[in-house]
Length: 256
Image (cartoon, rainbow, N blue to C red):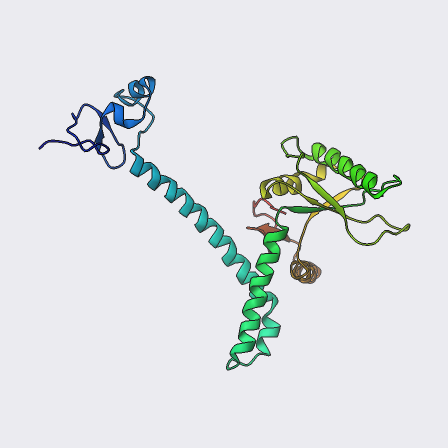
């Protein structure tokens, strides 16, 4: 039975280029490969794969699907976490009152969106206020100070696009925290995992929502009660960005 090229649909020899996924054949000129690449894919003991355009698009889609599945799993964990936050309020709402049920749903969505807005931010604490005279000079001074601390934490962090802003009103009695917006969430994770490298009293935390802070506070109170009862083998660790009480012996990397 004659074989047609998957691209130009004309006759092609079975000694030409073959897709490793769908097993179709293509002319060398239709494959889009260079002469060197053609030599590589025609080797019997080659370790690289060749995919036709259709299969390449399919693999790209599958990769995106896998990424979406990861995101969905993370959102599911967050929704479960959020539901536990608002359970007290939800119990007071009549199941027949659709308007109130809508309010609960909206509060969950609002919380998720707020977390997404904050996910590239970290908060620096205990950085001294700038002694510059103008607000512009003070902002630039804070920017340079933050960049210096970030370089101490990791040289892999992109600092050129960092944005900084002091939170709250100025006071002579205390240093305002600095909200730092990083390029991406992976930089946030890098900062949080290496923040202990700073030894001069400066502390770094994630930019948590009020609901997240309240939940973590209650979780710490619960852990304290467990430890006071004699069980000292428990601790709080962040699993998929959700704080949980787990055994100290569990080897789970924190992400906050």
